Length: 366
Ligand SMILES: [Zn+2]
Image (cartoon, protein in one colour):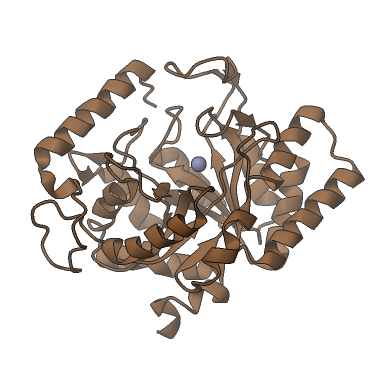
């Protein structure tokens, strides 16, 4: 298990950016029109996915729902994405910018089959984080939690996300709750009952450990709680609940190794993972080296090809003057064997999210 000090990671990120810049302009953007699928990249054009895929994990500007939707719709063709799913940032009640699905749902719902939302990051997640602090998991708390989850489903979310069990301070404040917290177990039951997945952000911490070097405390705590056993208890609690462990490939502790992913996927058939590759913050155990998928990751994606999906963590509208996260992930995707690529691109999404999503994907017609 490799653990790099934060400073090294940061400089590795800069080196990575330098390499990408040197490799050529095909990684960069100049606001040009999208290139056609299958057309070789030229000049500064972004490279689309070689076969369609669903971008399952993105975030957005909550103050600009119209601009968000316009930019995501424009991105579909550029990326060769069939659909884009938005998730709510996992948040705490004491964070002023907190929001949930209602800020975008009315606009996004006008584009069924293109855009969809997971919800609960700003409310259900905040309730779990709060309950982990207060210890209150009484009837009133559980009732309120269940009602909120069911309200979100009625409003049209297709899953619960982004939820957090171990989340470092960043766009939203530090968050911790055991993955087998009673409200997570309750959410698993609600998710199973309604056939929707839970999308979970959890830095891998196999045993209690000090905060990785390079992260500041405060706002992060000096020690992290072990959480893999808790995740396994959540997975075992209700095997009909599909749990998507977000961000495989974006490891902040050094423990989200292909080996750990493999062991958990083997043991728990209701576990799925999103792949995320951010060249600007590669973290540890990065799946790519010199732009090529590392063998240990390729065999993981191939051996468990029915358990991975694409979740780049892209933001819409796209941040200016920076590499877009989707591009690096698509470059990885394009290297996968075609049967694996079809599963990870669309087929797994259809299976995880069910008919309401599958009906829009070409896999449903086959
Ligand atoms: Zn996340």
